[in-house]
Length: 118
Image (tube, rainbow, N blue to C red; front, side, top):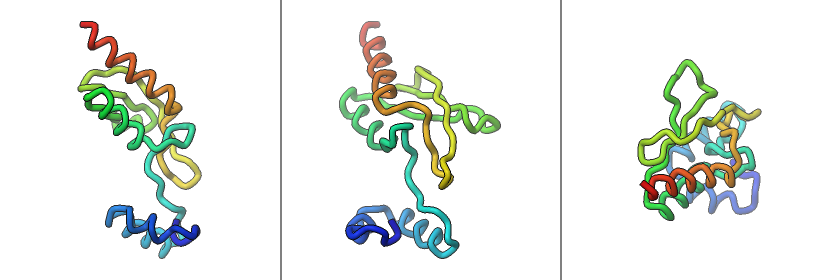
């Protein structure tokens, strides 16, 4: 990012304007690059969520219900609490949810399967 890779221009154009502005500010202040939230295995949360929402026609949210507990999040599937997830910041201060993408998929698949049985 920020020009570190040969295809950074095409990556930069694909990013929303707010991300490009964020990258410029981070470079100006010599801050680490921004990465969207990931799971422990490095998978981007937004990509996994979008895939599962499309596959199961549901709405998935990771929410922090108590702002005083920043490391405790809840997984909601169609508004129903289905799992708790830890969250921490990595060395670059980017969010990492303490589940792997396959574990998150199982949580959602179990929730969707149990709601279909009702």
